[in-house]
Image 1 (cartoon, rainbow, N blue to C red):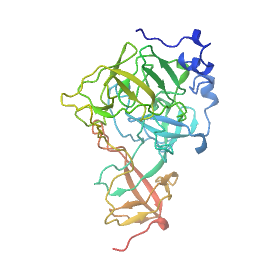
Image 2: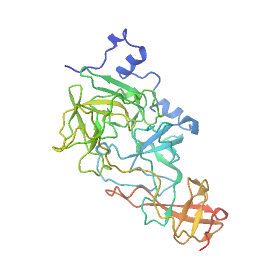
Image 3: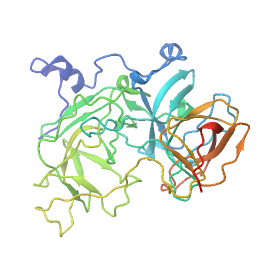
Image 4: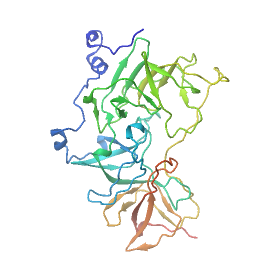
Length: 375
């Protein structure tokens, strides 16, 4: 059967909202910043209640202030096109806008809903000190500045496509857009273009149209990934953080469909045309492996100094830098100087080794906030 996007001619049988989504038209003005809109938003501020987020490219230049001449970055991919690395982005909360500059905060980010569902399509933030060899352990949140050119394009509204064969893509705000098409965090690039009016640089999480899974789709090891949306092939590439030899995908027991909804990019059901391992037991419920991203690593023992959670941090020049989100433990020397104790944070997660820069950010805590455990 042929695939189709629901035409407006069927709107008599559907609600106006559904028809708008089916054609990719926005139900309210876009958040994309262009021309006069960009000028109007040049000094915009956001509160925590606004819940506005951006996706930063993982090789984005990170500045301590707009006049910082020595930015740092987690990765440097050289001439590699960013569109060839669509999933290598970080979620950050948007604080303010100033012309070409965006002020962001790396945390805290509410990753899950009250019922344990993902609130974001991309489930990775910008972390610091991911190695147990670091002399600093404990999660921090930093205020940083980035340029608009280092922000990845995302969907700002839901976009719906329904096909005759029963496949569906109801894609949510915060989904990365690659070459005009939605990219899902499981590695699938959906084969349709979205209207530019629903593409922007910032988004607010919205799970209002994320359907609960109607049938059980157990995670299944897949030998060869091949899928279709309607009668069009869906491109797939194993994501860089998936270290399994073969991917694990949620496939129904009849092995006909893949259902993607758990990670929060939307409700997407694809026809499965791939291949399973020869010894796959169809009656066995499988649980796939994966890498859990979270707080920073590091042993708690032998800390020479501890900085309590919610302690304000500053840069070397004394300007505000952020806060500690949990107890930060310093295992190396932690001398006090000018009423402060300063230490370095490793930028990024070294487990993604390709292009890793090993850049550092130096921050300081008030001397009177530092606790020195008895040795």
